[in-house]
Image (cartoon, rainbow, N blue to C red; front, side, top):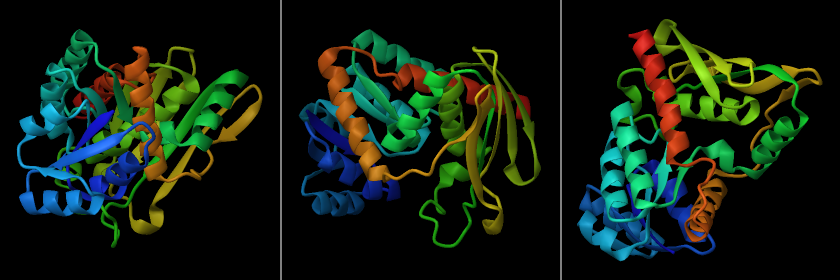
Length: 291
């Protein structure tokens, strides 16, 4: 399947480009970006065509992978979906509920395949852990702490403007937190949000299963206070999410391969744009409460 890549930033260079190039059944055709010099540089590194016109890229491909800010992704993915292109989306699928719903509706109307790249959901050791947790059952609750230090020297996303707008933690690490807790405890039906100092957000979640969980998320933790832990507890004890042993490149590769499989089979992927839109619904509810 012929893919185009939209975006030339750090995530596109470090993850999407190499992952798409390595994926089985994927032919990376070209790259489009807002800046011609960056587009040419990334396309050259990947050995593909640099496109100066997005419509021209769409004419050349069957699917589009996005590595751009959520507001940009929402409008460009909607344009791609309208002409029948399959979608490999980054999280969150949009930064507004209306945009997310419009994209999900367009994808459904066009009958296209979609996958949203929640990294942990495509890392095999973590996927095996999620499957084991679901099979064991009996879980009463869970938690996640995702306290990131965006300002720590050397961080690749330190200059990401959209992560610094509004409440960046909700829209950046929030999707990962909700996707992981959903994978362990099932769909989330209710959410309560409380704000803390320096952009810290606490979420209390009620799952369809009756279990409850909490998520503490931040992008502005002090470097020595940066902390990540996810777990569940219940009738059989406590289980902690293991450290990922596969890279983000390998995860992106798997996501692309599963998008191809979904397109060929006509079956929806479990982590598709409809799931991504549900995550946006929850994030929007949290933001509204915090406002």
